[in-house]
Image 1 (cartoon, helix red, strand yellow):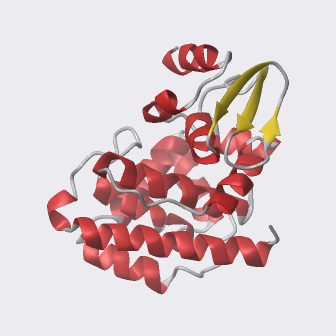
Image 2: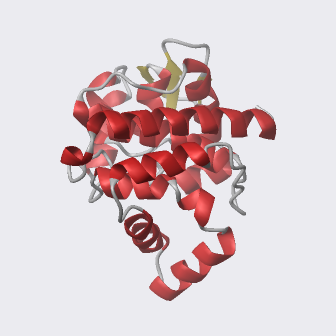
Length: 213
């Protein structure tokens, strides 16, 4: 996808995320998500980070905290410290903002928008997801050198395996096969154990061991 398409697809996924927030309501603000340590309110705040926090400001925060992860935590908590309805409204208002993180560009917010939509909806039992074409593009981004550093939390998780999507023509790597839907592969690659029961193949046991380590 070119930058204009990535921005448009990110906007669409942000609107879906906002719809889920409104569907859940304030009563679910402290429910767990698939992001470890983040409740619904914090994850919602994180979705606004690319809109409100330019790369230079984020890097300053990360340097002060000596941790990229901690910087994400701080900005997510700050931006999410409001009623969910307000966050949802602002997310819609800025859905098309073309934020471009310095390291990975528009591909970063786009891939985030796919993964975090499921981080929010999956624990709630909601069948809300990005389109299949988005997941295929997200897979290409995740397995790229910069995508690995940005989205794959376990070093070596993807190595020595052949990842094969079952619902779209896509594969990556060589070795024992790991098969599943494009969504399931992307979520497992990005470190979501909740999706481990949705992959199969000779390499699936290796993936489970690596994520558990």
